[in-house]
Length: 223
Image 1: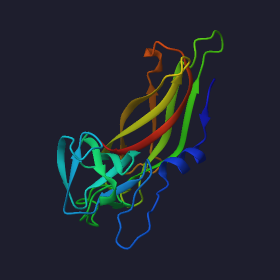
Image 2 (image 1 turned 120 degrees about the horizontal axis):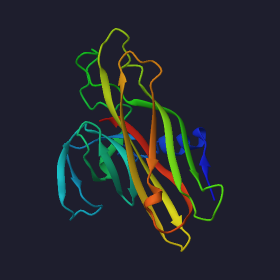
Image 3 (image 1 turned 180 degrees about the vertical axis):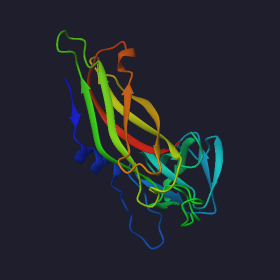
Image 4 (image 1 turned 90 degrees about the vertical axis):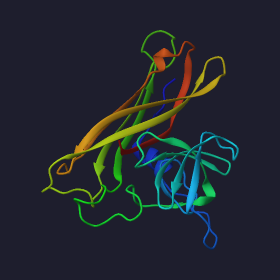
């Protein structure tokens, strides 16, 4: 059995923000959106538990991508911190339209690039035409561009980027699991069209037959 998520559906699910009303309350985000730390310092933990190991402490204004939600916790990727991931208390996050962090200037040569724009998001999982081996290939692809504020046709150089994806799948014996994968690339500052990024999920390595799979997260950041 194969499933295919069109770009419009995928973007609507992965990039729409969900605001929680309340005076001064932090804004909780859905998977794929940007958020920023809204307290002086916030512990990034290894698990969604206030007793879990602290990976690092994030200062106010740190911009993150939301990868997953569990109760009052959000699993995040730190936009300007390399490959750092962990869990934050979601009530201390606010919605952010920027991927470059607080205090970002307006000059191109001194500011971090604005958030990346993801379009033409597509997900394809398929089984072989012949045989009964289950799904053997899952690919997520998208067009990634610099946001308008970062595009500069007069500027040399490029921005390294990394796109990460997560799928959930169910095997024929009824088990459910998740799989992560990523792809790295770069976008030149004068590249208006952007780059095509393609994430291949190694489902062939799974011994059990996979009956169904769907994309649960897709995001790109400076890498």
